[in-house]
Length: 212
Image (tube, rainbow, N blue to C red; front, top):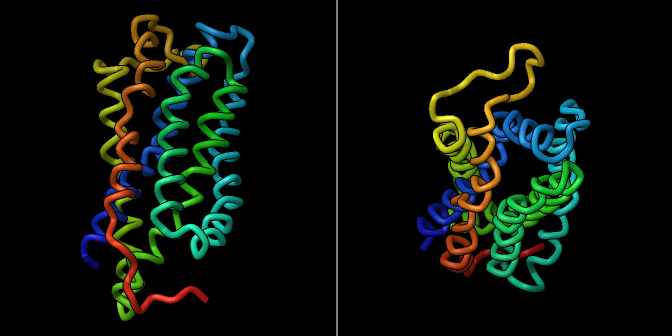
């Protein structure tokens, strides 16, 4: 069961790793908004997506930890995963409305979702291996990085299979309309929707684990 906790943690963090692909996605997101939604949009505002997401993560992490003894780790993980996955799916709609809505879905909700269950996953898996907590945490965090490594080329293949370069005049946007058509559906088809499934299948915490 301990090994299953680690595997489950890696799988969940693997889905959370899509957040690290923001550097790849941001050009397509800003290009879509500027060319299809708001011609006056300042693409430099895109920096707020990652900044706000990380800030909200810092707020939701202690909240998830505080609720852990009361509602159980499964509830915390599933709630966090569901919010995280739902935020990506919701961006399918918000990106068609404007940047402020994207910030709400792909920064505020996303940051809250993966932050809510981020540390809880470590504590549950590490409770099975008290002498190797550092190793267990490292393995699970590796899943986060692996997610970015896998999702980035998938996103590029979906949106920009020919790897068309950005507009050399602006240096910030893609100017090929056919490519931008695929940006919005990408969020709808994202694999992070599997996150709650992985969370619900995790085994229970070790019987010797105590919350202090």
